[in-house]
Length: 636
Image (cartoon, rainbow, N blue to C red):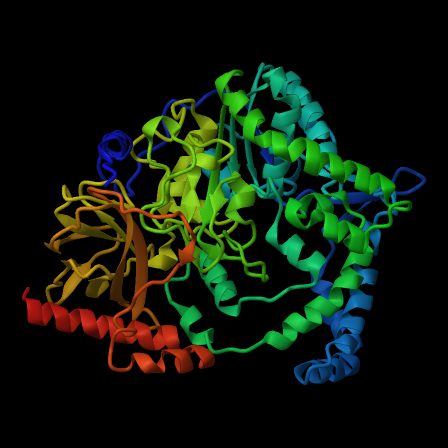
C-alpha cells in the first residue's frame, strides 16, 4: 500500500489549522494606481457624427424594451403560444427582428471592423481617473465595478483608481494592446512607474493576454484576475452551438447569491419546466449572430475545443478572413502561452499575478462543464477538471508534484497542480460569476491581492487557503473542522465548526448534521442556535477512517429565523488526509452524494421524484428528520 507521509507533511505545512472567516482591514497596501478592467460590455460606446458630435449608443436604453414588445403584442402572444406547443420559430423571428434593430449601432462588418463610427466614451487615462470623473459627474458615471471600487476606497484614495475603456467588441489581443497604451498613460498621469490591476470576466481574458504579450515591460506590480474568461466562456459555446439549455434552478440560485437572499427560493422552482424557452433562444441565435457574429470578442470567447467547428459553421473563409486571422492567433498562439507566461510574470518579472475562480457550479446555459455558472473553471484557471456529475476517484494522485503540496480540491473535481499558476490560483466552490464581492472570503482576498504585496502565493496567509467553500450569505451556514484547513479532515480534528454567515441578523436553528461516511456521525443537541456571525462546535463521534485522498460529504439541516422557507440545507465536501491512499486506475467516476433518503425504504421513489422535480425537496426533509432521529438514538 502506498503511504502518504510526505503528502501529509506537505499538507500540514500547507493546511495548518482551520481559519474562520473573520478578517481585519487590509494592511500594508501599496501607493500604486489601480487599473480596473471591467467585465464584458462594461465600457460605454458613443457614435461620432461627421461634425464630431458624440451620442452614447451603448449602453442602450433597456427601458425601451417593454414598449417595443407592446408595439407587437399580438405577434408576441401568438409566438409565445406556438412556442409552448413546440414551434419556437415565429416568436424567435419577432424577437430577433427587434433585437437586430435595437442593437443596430453595435454591429460589425465582415472583417470585424465597426459598421458605425464608434469610440469608447472615455479615451484617455486622465479622463478615466475616479477623482476626475467624480468632480465632473459626482454620481459614479463611467466608473467601473462600483461596489468593489467603493470597497477599495476604504484603503486608497479615489485619485488612485482608473477605469480602462476599450471597444469590447474587438478581440482580446486588440483590447490588450490598448491596455498596454492605457497603462503608459496611467503611469504618466499618476507619476508612478508601475500599476496594479483588478479585473474580472472578459477583463480577465484581456489582462491575461496583456500579461502574455506585454508582461516583459514589468509595468505591473499586482494583477488580480477574478473569475477570468481566459480560455473562453460557457455561454458563447452554447450560443454558437445552438445548444442553449437553461438550468432554471441554477438561475434562481444565481439570483439568490447576487442579491444575498437568505431565503432558499430555488427549491420552489425545481419542478418548473421552461424548456420551450430554450427552443426559442436557440432559434434566436441566427438573429443574435447577425449583430454579434462579427465581434472578435465573441470568437475569442469560443473555447478551443469547439472553435474549429464553430468557425466552419458561422464564418466565411474569404469575407471573414480578418476575424479568423485574429482569433486563430488568440486560440493557437496566445492562449497556450498562459501556462508559461503568467508564471513568468511571477517568477522572473517580480509581479504578483493571481486568479480567483468559482468552481463546482453547472453552466447556467447548457454546456456540461463545471465552473461559476458562466465561465468553466478550466477556462478560468487552466486546471484539469471533471465534468458536471463526475469527480476524480478516491485515491487519485495529482498530475504534477508541486514540491509535495497537495493540490486536489476537497470536492475532488479539480487538479490544481495543472493550473496556469498552481501556486497563485484560489478556487472557491459555489462562487457564482461576478459574485466575488458578495463573499466575505473573496472580498478580503481580492483586496489583499490587488492592494498589497503581502501575498506572494497560496501559502502566504493562513486566512486564505487555496480552496474555500463560498460564504455568501445566501448559503446561511459555513462548515469546517477545527484542526485541519477548511475542506480537509484528519484524526487530529475533534469537532465540526458551524458558522452563521447570514447578514440579516438571523439566528440559525440547527436541526441535524449528517455525514455520508458511516464511520463518522454527529449528535446535535436540541435547540442548538447559532447567532449571526457566530460559531458552534459539534463533536465528532465515531472514528475518522485511516485513509487519504478520499471524499466525504457533510450535510447541515437548519431553519433560519425569519425566512419564508422553513428548512434549509448546506452540503460541503471534505477530503480525508489520514493514512493510506487506496489503489485506483485514475478513472473518472460519477459524482454522487449518498443521502439517507436513497438508502431508506422509500429510496425506490427516487427516480420518480427526480422526473417530476421534487427529489431534492423530499430528500432535504428526510435528511433533516434522519439526522434528528439519529441524534436521539445515539445520544446527545
